[in-house]
Length: 394
Image (cartoon, rainbow, N blue to C red; front, side, top):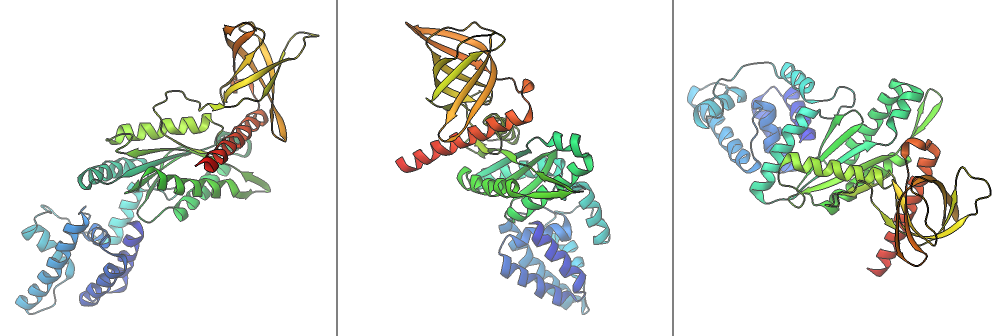
């Protein structure tokens, strides 16, 4: 809608003759379809009108304009005809105020858009989400939300300064604006969080768009004062009416899905799931080498993996370990470099002779960035392997 609004505004600047203006607006309608009607009325009146009703109003206004010209025997402004129509016939306007459109548009832009990124702001997002959900309910349509968050954004601000962070946000916003469809609504939700509303879109098509954005950002290299900034983005996806039927809960579902994306290694997009765990667990059955830390001459034990996530590892072992013990785990991955993890034993359960389930918690606070990134990459590779197997079987 914003692109069509810009075209309409340009028409208003370029054509002072109202007959010519009507011709040009009709050309826009012919080219862009029925979605042009609400955009035209939003520019001229700031009214929110559904496409079908807006189409009827436009036809009646053009006829009303011609009738006024004929009755008065002189030129009548199209704006005059519109004001009279909505005040006297359609009665959508009760106390209209006359103001120059460029002054009004400047005020609207300041109130609706984020000044740094050019995306819509939080208030506009809240209003639009409510409106789009109501529209989806009326017409029985799908609707999806993509909730994005830049990975490790704080480290960019801390190491290169907030101006570097601002530049990153502007470049990410530019990518999102270029990749999204004209009917999608992108807003800066707060800080490094960006949300996209996708009307009439199910979760599969929403995921396709989200992946395009994620991959484009992953490939981006931003040069800032001699430093090359590379970054990734994580996303959560939720859909109406499958996951929630009101704006607050739909947004909450997308936010929960974002936490799962972060917990499963970052740089990915996760669907909302009723599973309450923050971290998405991935099953694996590779050999796990275990070494207790803090002791000399402690032999390395060999266990068998069960599942892993960004927050911990569960493996089967022939010997029990004491809860609270610090251990180093070595996990192979095909021909890739083994993954080394340091964590704390938090769970030990026996289910047979020399058969123990051992749970090791990984504290992100105790890991440096390289280790975190290594785990993230490993989890992503594992997810890709599992997806490849599923694709072959499907």
